[in-house]
Length: 130
Picture 1 (cartoon, rainbow, N blue to C red):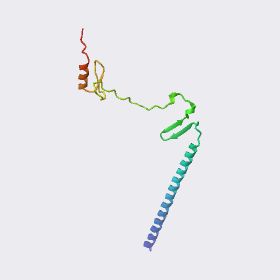
Picture 2: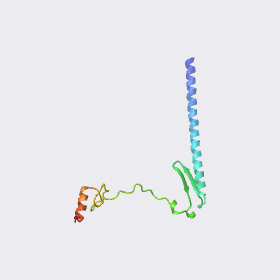
Picture 3: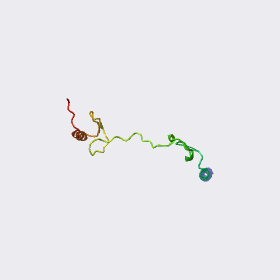
Picture 4: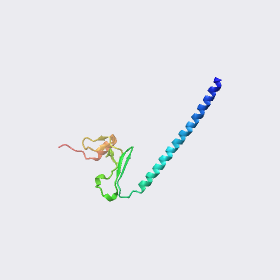
């Protein structure tokens, strides 16, 4: 008797579990469909905005304010690509395109190696003391 009762209970639990999973799947699918519909409505609303409107978008990466070109904002608000750090200076050696590692103590020229140092000093007239 107890074995049969336990078997029936386990079957009932299995059925409830299966039905519960099905209902949670349906809930997830409904949420996804609702999100997609909301996104489509937002896109449609954004497409209907007049071209001279100011747009404010708050996202996970920060807030973005977009102004139309007809407002004529000063150039201070123009976005510029960030170039930090500045590119390394190139070696002053003849036909050398390497970035510099050293500076000549006398001429302050950027150099990358001893060979470039020697090549630059061969070209330079020697400074003679009076």
